Image (tube, rainbow, N blue to C red):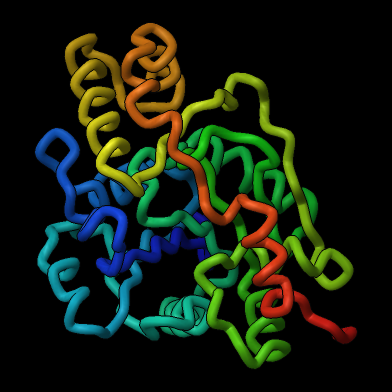
Length: 259
């Protein structure tokens, strides 16, 4: 176990497309619990911290039995960067492994690979260039988050934390990684719509039926063998990937002076 490296899982219950999606069950287990359990498989971490807001609407998350190994933190509802910094201070975290709560099948294989690269490159921010949606996260230095927090007054789009790094390559040491081919396939493994939930239930059912462990290799094996499962949700698109959206938020993510 390495000190000062922790997994942060931001999660709220405010989703409009799929209400209370973190509580939706995949084979009788809440989706956020799947995310937590898969995050625990990441090597060399001190803590896995589930992070939500102080708002009443997020109270049901506190009632979930995550187990003794999980920390629970409540912070600012809208400013995710402030929530991260507050949690980092409380738990003495230097390096954050950011895993979003709508990724129940985050890949520990990918995150282990990224963490090793992050340390080798002495990066501020590390992410994979290509991956199946929902299988990867980012590695972020707390010192870099502090720079963003001090440099930008309006952090209304802080939930799109990745953009604050990608839009400032002259300020941060970015490490964008080409993953091994075995870790990359064109599947959608994130939870935003009812179609995603249906797909996940079919996926886990098949994994159990075939008596396969829940890992990236076996997930790809099932999705490639049973094409109908992937077809359930593969037409759904990511809003934040659109050029229009990226252009609209650039004025909030770009740091316009030297640090």
